[in-house]
Image (cartoon, rainbow, N blue to C red; front, side):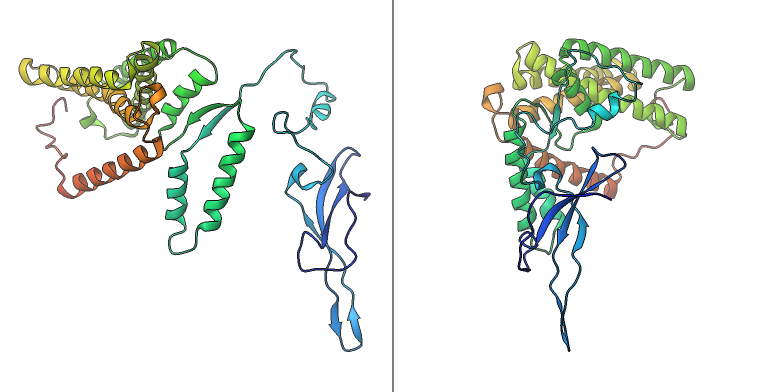
Length: 332
């Protein structure tokens, strides 16, 4: 094994690992593969007949290029593409000239991250974790100035995916809304063709449960795309969009109450509108004023809504007010 040392070790051992260690590289399966280690000088063991020297302790170094004092990493260019020659020399891939990569960074609000740390470290001192999180936030904001950012504040995967399609792939909200409408119609069509009902009161088999969750996830994505389309593409703003969806939400209730609208259709109509309705008002409260919001922060809104949902779920679990008699359940 060939060793390549990149810095001089200190002469006198010390208790500080940084001062008593040096970065060394061990050659791997080929000359251009170098495995980094941290070689730590150990203090001699005291014996009756004098001190007995100890061999240096070699630890695997996980700091990457940042742990090498001879390497400078620029935030705007990043690390050099070390693996490119290893991949191209295999001869089983082809480089695409002019290909570009769009970086979409999922970001959780600071308040939400801090709350998670406080909950995880309950009963212990969380300050080190809070300081580290703050440091990483600052570094990411500096290094990722040209990244496309999507907030991932405890939202379902389908909602985040809808935003990634728009932000990362530049797909207009009108196109993504149309796509998810077709996808949801397909889910309902296959569900009804297979089970002859779309009633949630008939979900007592694994297959119907799969259909239900497919509809729910597609509804989340559709609601996100539709809400952003009305607020951003149609320039209605979040508050006006919220009022519009509130009116749409009331339509199936009125028609079910006064005109005997089919209960299953009324439920799914209201359920689909629930997502853009809630998101529009939440975005209006949390988003900055530059995009028609109040600027209270997505983290605070997420925490408040999460607490409210937890209370409502606990209330229903205790009172069972949401449980209907199977004989009286509409469309059962």
